[in-house]
Image (tube, rainbow, N blue to C red; front, side, top):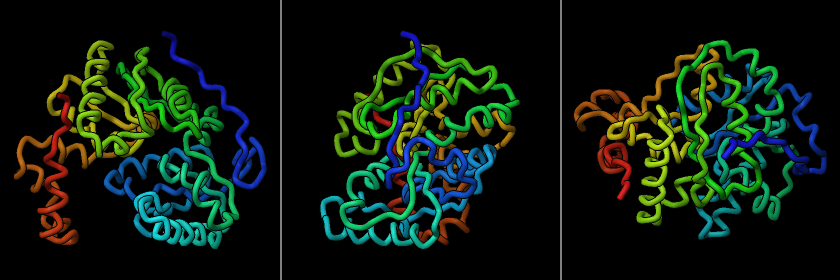
Length: 302
């Protein structure tokens, strides 16, 4: 199979302007969502990439900027969270670039039913792809590695798989294996409630990466990175997010601390890397009951 080259379709924005959105916009709000905060390196890399193509970035994220999808079972709560987030963006007065597919989908399909966003919305992959000539000029550091892309089939609002392949092709020296094994759902966290399905998907992608001779399995979204990065402890390949590779090709050295904690040989090593100050800020009880079990939980592949 030949890897596709993405042709970005005409996409109607939130308020009727067509495909020209952000071709000339110089300042945006980067909405990175509420769950990517575990991966500060991903947020920093994303901001650096947007700035590299000439866009002024105002980041917004964390629990105060939730889209409401975490409360989908309670429509009133989801509505309240979504409306408050949109009101904040309306007050900022800038167009919005999304990271999280759940936030992006909610903005298209849910939020508009309860409030009126006064801004345009595009996904970060769309923005970087439209400015790929500018981005390519910044990617001057070769990465001589063979990679396989971990994809999903459920994020139909944006052709992220094709867009990310095109962006990775800009990196000098990077070889992208030709694979076709898209997982169900829009990202791995959507499968977390189905552990047997998640294990089957993980096993399939482990075998796919091995067959391809990949040195890295490249993720697109934060939840995939979070749930799969532990594979690096037991498999003959690393797990890295695509924005981290792009940032590395620009010469940025961003430490992926979450993965380092996840693949630490033992619990004591992970705790030492995190350090007492961060544990104190999180709260020792919360850390021991919530954070540490997550960090020590390895991906299941059977």
